[in-house]
Each structure stands twice: as structure tokens, then as C-alpha cells.
Image 1 (cartoon, rainbow, N blue to C red):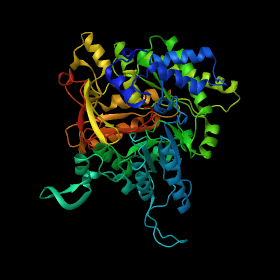
Image 2: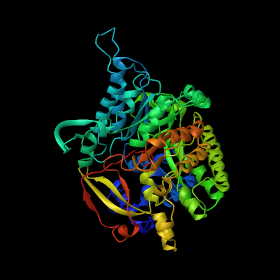
Image 3: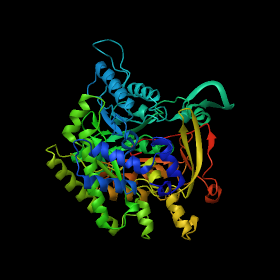
Image 4: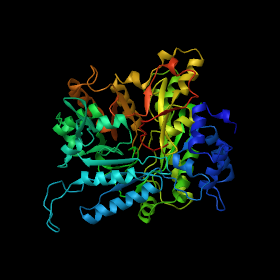
Length: 555
């Protein structure tokens, strides 16, 4: 495949930086070796016709498997799974050690991890068997966080981790502020001003690699049926209000919703789109690029092929340890997702909302993914998947395809993207969103294109969009809504109660929620810039000392 088949130079550079086998490799070669590894070989799992069709839809960026599939294509190891879902199963010191062991094994394979720590006793209790005082779940979270800090996967890939705690756990007050770095002084040795100590947040601004509490870990509270009963009675628990306030200020903790038949599915992967109740469950991700598909019949065809591919992945992927294999055989979760939804809407002249036409396409996505996967598993006499669909953030594969990521609106017409290179130095480039640029080249005013920054002042549209799409997704959706910075007229103390009521309005139909107030984390990876500032500079690489690379799911 010619290099020009990438939609823009940024996607091409991403391919050569992360996934190619040298400068002479091509996207077509990667597609061929990946399909052969996953579905072909001496004992092929799919027919030659299906394998050729799969190569075609991958080459044409209509379907892209998760980033671990791309990275390991053609390698002797086949660690194709993006993340692993873990749970502290017993409140014992032996289980603390086992959690650390499972974490290390998973991270060293290149996958991220998520852990639910809710079963662990709170801090400050007497330990009758060994003496002493319990240190509580946050201490184990910090241990796992440091494991992640020291497992730099492949020398360039930042470990991605997630931690959750039930909203009624006694240590939730400490958990809520565990990442509130602005209020955590490092010491009195350095001051910006005479009356303000130097904090962890300040240190992160100066050097993104400065170690801060839980800085490798995304955190959320688990909300259950008991919480939902309060909400249905018109009551807002105090812990929930504090969670909302903290999220509006710092972005974390997020919200994990587990109700009804999903009440035990508190486990999440690092980016939270895969759900489970079983320790050592596993992600299996791939995304259909809706923006590159013209008709609903073509969409049905691509959905079928993509589902077959992911079933093959559950048969052949290498796994870090035996228990994961056992859980995979029992659950066989498929995480078929979508990206390019906003591009699909723009091409049809729609606003950022789930239209009647999109509802029809999503129904096809739901029905065809289940029909094909069930049929494919039956043909191979293997277990039927317990779940079929999840929507990942698709950060890197969205760049490869040159489309809008996941269910997100276009982030910005132009932005600055920071990234780690060679494992030691941080760089940035100016990027013009490829979808936006296509519209601009056709005569659209760049300042008229609706973006995540525009929608930051209309959070209900973002939340409702996620709510509507969730009705077709049997696991979860990774989506983070942008908000104005804390302390601005649009995001401050007076907005906490209205936002809490807004989120509660949709919570019963969501599986999770996260937000990102502008500037709430040091060295954020993407920063909006003016279109004309970026224009003409997209081929220049600049060195920078601070960066934030978030999440790995679907990338």
C-alpha cells in the first residue's frame, strides 16, 4: 500500500513510530501478517475468502483491531489483549502479594490493568492475627501504581491502570482526594510565593515524570443499586456530591455505574469500556470506523467480519497466566467498538446527537455482532461470548485512520499533541484534525466546526449522546467530556449541585462517566490551538519536557 493511503501525514508517522517493522514496512503488510497470525496459519480459523476480505477492510481503515494486535502482528509473542481486569478477592496479606504479582505479569505483557479494591478493610483497624494496624486499600493502590511506573512497556509505552472503590467504603473520603495534588505540599524547601507551598501539582507542571500519588492510575467510585435507590427517591448522598465536586475540579475520581443485572460487574479495564465480575478477565478490542463506511449494508458486512476476527483472537492470543485463560474460556468477551461517529454525523449534515438514522445503524451493530459471533463460536464448538460490544477511546488507531475517536466529537480543529519518543524524551507536533481539514478544503469555515471545546459548555449533549449509544453496547463506553477549567464562570462551586442532578438524571442508563476540566492535570497531552497557528507547521517536530500520555485501550 502506498504511504499516501494514510489520510494524513500524522497517521503515517504514527504507523512508522509505533507499529512498523522498519522504514520499508507498509500498512498493507501489517494487515496481511496480522490477519494471518490471528485467523490463518497451518490450521486456519477462517476461510481464505474471509481472510482476504478482512485484509481489505483493515487496509482501507474500515476496521482496525486494538493496538496490541497491531504491535504484535508478525511477532512470535501474541499478547493481543489491551488490558486485564483484576479484583482483590480476599482481605488477606497473601492476596495483597497476589494482586501485585498478577499486576506485574499483565503489565509486562504490554497490557493495562484495572483493579477493584472494595473488599479490602479500611485503614486504621486492628489486625488480630499479626498485630498492628491495617493500612487500607489506598496503600495497595500506591504499591500497584509504583509497579506500573517501573514497567515501561517496550521502553516507550506508559503503563495504564485503573483503581476503583465502592462508594460506601470507609476509606472513600481519603480516596476522593487521593489525586488532589494542588493541595498536597511536597515540602517547604521551594515556594512560588511566600504564602503558598510548592505542591505535587506544581512539580508535575515542571516535570511530568515527577512521581505523584497514583499518577499512573485512573480512579473511580463504584455506584450500586443502593445508591440508585437514593437517586430514585430524589436524594443525593453526600459522598456523591463530594465526588462530583472533586471531578469538576480535578477530573477524578470518575463514576462507575453498576446496576441491576450488572450490579456485580465492578471490574473495569484501564480505560473502563470492558466490564466484568470475574478476576483475571480480559479485553479483546477492535473498532469499526463508521466515518469510512457509506451504506448500512456495507456496515453490516464489516461488523460481521470484525466479529469473526475478534472470535479468532479469543482462540489464539497468548495470555500472562493460567487463570486468565480459564476466565477467557468461560466469558470470551468481545469488545467490538466504533469510532468515526462524529465524522459520520458531519458528512450527513447532523449535529452531535444520536439521530434516527444513527439509531438504525446502531441496531445493525448490535444485532449483527451478536449473530455473527454466536454463529462463529458454534462452528468451532467453543463457548459463546458473555458480551460482544464495548467502545474504546481509540486514540492512536483513530489517528491512523484519520477520523474522530470513539464516540467523541472532534476534539479541536487544530491542537498540539505531546508524545514520548525513544523512552526518554518528550516531543510535540501541531496537528490539524484530518476530518476538519477535509471539510475546510471543501470550503467550510474552520471556526464553524463543532468541537469538544465548543461542547464543553453544553455537558448535557455529551452525556445524552453517551446515554443513547450505551443502549446498544452491552459492556461500557470510554468517553471523557471536556469541561471549562475549575474556577471559571462555567465550572465552579455553584455548578456542583446542578451537575450532580444532571448526571443523576442519566446515570441509570450509563455504565460510567468521566470528565476533564481544562488544565486539571500537568502536561495534558492535547491542547487546542488556533487553526492558522498550526497550518504549515504540521511536519515539524518540537522537543518538550512535559507530557501526559493517557490510557491504552484501543490504541
